[in-house]
Image (cartoon, rainbow, N blue to C red; front, side):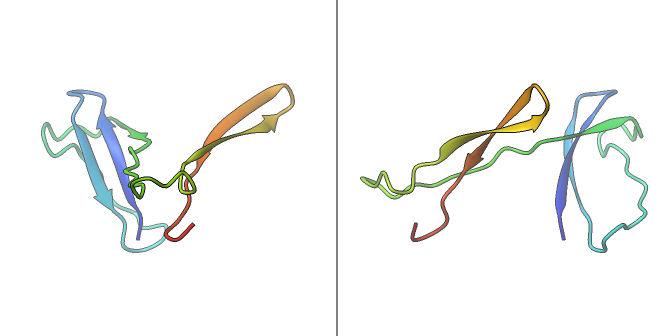
Length: 81
């Protein structure tokens, strides 16, 4: 059950939508202005690290995405790592 975040292209409002069924067909409208013009945005991630521990520090990993292009991502350790 993913939650996706959207930005309204008309008023700039950020809003979320929970999808209960895979490939669910739903009509999405901005709750503020009712526009159906929006874009999906990447949500912020909240991360908590244990005090005094460097073992749980996120690492930036760079990979090749396509010929001549690289992408970066974070490896965020789970609990107990």
